[in-house]
Length: 144
Figure 1 (cartoon, helix red, strand yellow):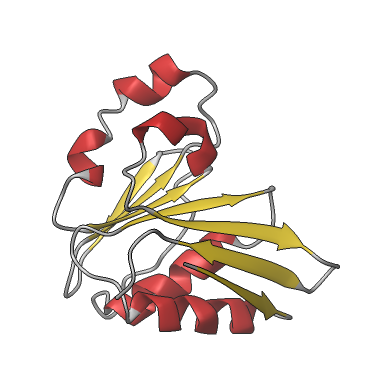
Figure 2 (spheres, rainbow, N blue to C red):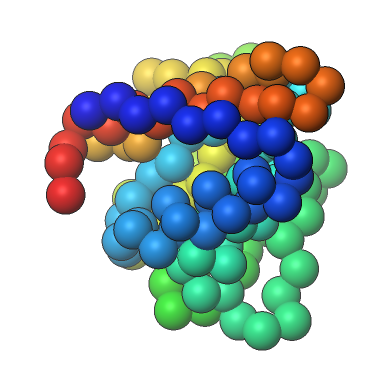
């Protein structure tokens, strides 16, 4: 199944993420694919709100620490592969523990571990349309 959405501000991107987050279940894996600055972390902030992260939790990019964990109704594992360049570096992270967990795993730059993504993963391709407008193509192989 595939759906396409457009947003014209960070607030709209977060609102889209929140709607998506409300539909997620334990064990879901979200693969975010898009250029630098397209709104991957912004979308993740909305997803976390939709999933129901604990009050006061701040969702930020894990670019330098690679993995952030957020508590809430369902744990969220926010992974950023931007700084990793090889399959060996990604394999050394041991991401299978997160991907196969009962939490929700959100992976920025997920195309860098394409072979390690589960078949049931929800892929979100994010593209720039102009300075403010983003397009989100959401693909997943299972319908709910």
